[in-house]
Image (tube, rainbow, N blue to C red; front, top):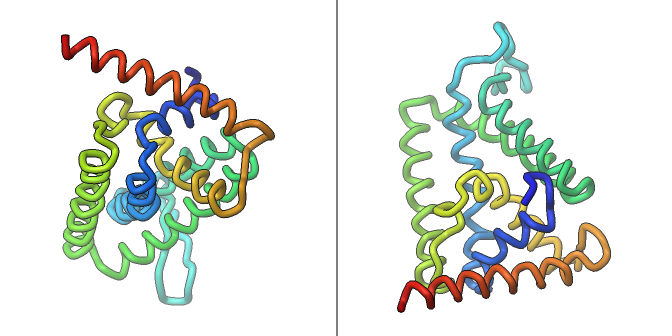
Length: 197
């Protein structure tokens, strides 16, 4: 599976997310985990000396730091995967980065890390409960950390676009992906049966 193969990455991630309640939980909690992580990244040093960009006179700033760098990586990755939905995801990433910078600056580090910690614990607990109770399968993050952290937010966006607007990256995408998902789930079930014996 190639890093930029949308079909394979989507199918691999979707194989871990088939239960509608678990998918709904992910729709609610996945983007907030990314957003709150960005709040903490606001406090990393600038990548370029004197790089603050003033957004509001005397108000909040965004800084070209590791938060910006991570946002740029995610945004480019999503656009490469699918130009249309990826552009929307990139826009959401940059809006999230700006919002997290504003929030980080207004909270200050001593309060921000506590807010981030509480929200991360809440969100990750909800995501793990979704897998344990409804999906009955461990999260994808345990099997492929990089793919799960890159694909999670985009998977959620694609699911929302599909369920609300019938969006497909290209005609026949979901039919092709379903075949791959079924094959991955069958392989997982076969491996589980083999372990039982």
